[in-house]
Length: 580
Image (cartoon, rainbow, N blue to C red):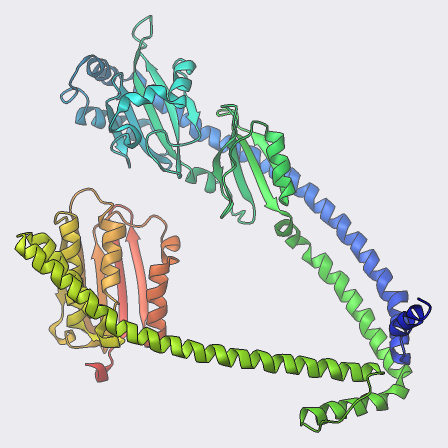
């Protein structure tokens, strides 16, 4: 023990004069400045939090009031629907009939449409409106054309909690935190039990359901991307999440105490403000992470660190003049480091700090060499794996082609022409996709790929899609990057025509103008509501990056779209004569 203490003191003792002066100046000047800056920084952060809470409380109140305007508009529309005498009569007759085919149907749909078009001021946030008679036969207007959750057995509605709430409300409008007629996390519902106003007894004649888009809340964020808005419903003695703008956050479920929920969020590092909505009773919560809020205080932190850096610089300059005696040893150490880097192998003393630095540098270089050796080994292993994948890529397609050929002949034996056609189309699509490992393909082969793809899709969707092709003959033998046009046709069908009611058309146009190949894919589908979000999707981003990498900045990829009218995608490629 007696020998251990001197050894420890010897280890922590500063041997060099330069380091001693430097340490003294740091203790006398830098530390007080840092302490003062830290106190100022904390006070500024506290003021920032207080101002944020006050500002957010006002913002939440405004958001709640805007929500109330939309909710009241929906409530008034529900009451206007109930006041329509013809619609009430159809519901009464349909509820009393065993067959509603001639009572509730397109006529009811048209009346709903007329009422909503005439009286509902803002339909942007209405996903669908459903009217049900007493036998729960339904007519829906909007994105939903039926009550999907209860389509097989509508009488199950009477066992649901939301239906019981509407009955208990006795004709008042009730807002439910989820979509009550179909699985859709992007909407919630307003339910009203329809009571006949023409009778004193006010007997129920049906049910009215408005499904409302949650995007109404995201549009109220007013550019506050760093803040999250959470809307909680505690009306059913259990907290449920109506809306949560925080990305990748688990929904808040369970429990019946809002204060406990707030405490859990605060423990997760959130700063909260909350406000209760008058119409629904829901709690609007603003939640922002501490680190996001304190980004605004970076100027204070920068100023503090700048002052400390200036003082540190002054200390370094002063220590340079006070430690001239150790300048020569330092230079010697530098030369020894250079010699060592050249492989001289000179021995150094471990008793001085400079030599410890050399030892540390040597250890770092050794570690770096070891890391480089490991990377080399991994690269070699990856090369071997790549060779194996190439061999597998040569074997697997043959197995796949043989399998598809077997399916084709089995379908022909069974006289199932559709399966046979689909097998042939799929086999040809795989062959064109592989393309013997080449990155480019003649245009006429890419067009064959598109036709095989459409053969498969029209078999799946009962010939709903009509494909038109208008490509200049002089382009047919031009080499283009493979899998360039087919994904655009697939995107048009998947996102444009599949969602459209009825048949749809997609047209491919190809022209050669002034040494530039111009391809246009146009559909008459449902269009794109948010073009900016769509362009960030993986598929379109992949096509854009492949174009840029292969054709360079002279290529062009552009999208235009109009909701309920269709989408147009245009690609411009330089004509490489060597590939024709």
